[in-house]
Image (cartoon, rainbow over all chains, first blue to last red; front, top):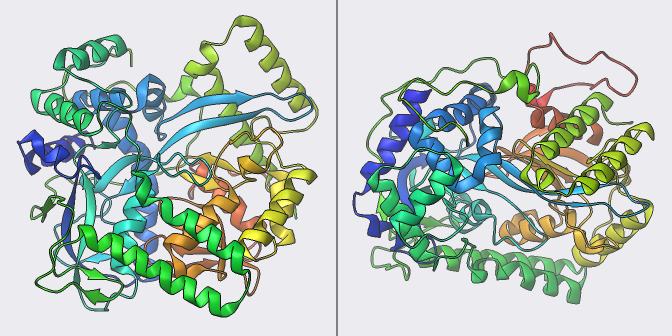
Length: 344
Length: 207
């Protein structure tokens, strides 16, 4: 698994050596669209069940391996902090307690910042090229999924689904079509929780966290990402979650009239398609219709087409946790490369 | 039918353990740490599951009214019973939606809210409007109640097609907890069957 993590990091590096790719699309910094030929039919039961089982058993190993790889560990430290790295060492997705509310007469409640491991190419579409291995680290990203009511500004994964994936797969033809999936250029998204204006600041932070230092290519990417977000924590731009508020108002005003429901569905689908069309290139499918050859997207998001099949193989193993105690579960770092900083 | 108490306890234990090793807890002044520990211990002695509380009647009433007003649907009684036992959780990528923070007296937002998540999903996936009431999600699935039948279902995350129909809502939530706890298949340490802990039918998460 550690070799597969190394391959994933290498692949990300090879997408572009030019760090300016990170800020090319200011609305979606640090991501590219990866063109995959795929069928949007659901997999059959047996096939899907196997992929599902394998994923569940691989995921914990992925977190542990990512935290034990020197570059993965440093990127994890910047993205999810020391408590997040600790959880990854236990085979769990990173999370952190943000607040505890202990009101008299009410049970104690907690609020956590949460992340999850997601598939870049989703499991429910069937890539035709054979270069995508669904349950391989090269197809994983750990993305923030914190939700606060209607505020989805800290849930980029929802944006990727609702802005890109759903409009392309909804009403899609049965035959293989090009599907443009969001591929983050970092194994974590967002990759940082604070701004960095210089390499020295990154190095100092990693030192404070007791994490290994990063290769130059990753330092440059982090700096570009920070620049793209104006050195502030990343938030999904407001315009991409405004649609929800409009929905609430519409429904409130009209109540249960079926005709209004139908109108609302059409209107929302149209809006979703319009937003997707701003980013997607000619030839992409949106709500079952192919964008014409002369279509020019308004937003300039880099597009790639992954051609290389993974070189490493990952083997699923039993996933059941025997214990969740940290005493029994903290793993020794991998032996892939020496790491002198194990404090994170 | 009550939810699986083993899963509830395991999740609660996990959350308490996470709290104890968090930076948040470590940075609390000593007296606040002591008070918090005492509160959590008291909840155990009251038979509650610390950091995994159920919603109270007032909160459920507000949620029910808000869902009726903003989504135009009634909150299924089976879901109200579930939320009374466990008012949502987020663990290992699995989220069960709870009462929205906006609807609580103290407006504390402890996780994804049922109303907000449905507004969001109905906006993003208009074909689901008034067809499904979403109750949770994971990387792979949306978990929902099919409103026409009241049956709990798992939907493929990308295509929104049904992947499984559960025999009851409790079975759905038990399955979500099982997934959140990372239990998939090996029965060697499976909890003993006790009344309320028997999951009838198909273990979706093991499939």
